Image (tube, rainbow, N blue to C red; front, side, top):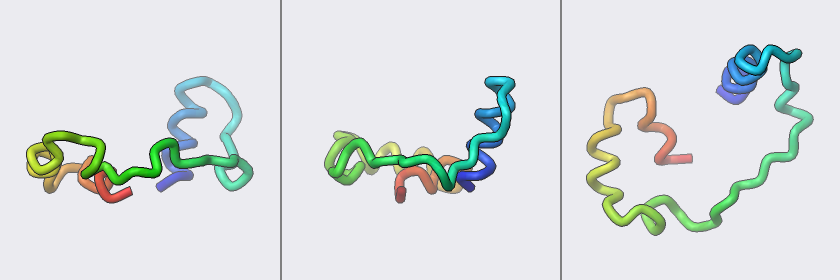
Length: 58
């Protein structure tokens, strides 16, 4: 999944593919999304069975 995302970003920016294995990504919020999103249950329900559902578990 990361390689596909970086490929789409590279394509959009009209630059060479980004080698995601060479990037140093760091999670910006150590807290869980359940702690950060006040209406987490509502958001989770709306995203259930969509292509965005996995982002809540990242």
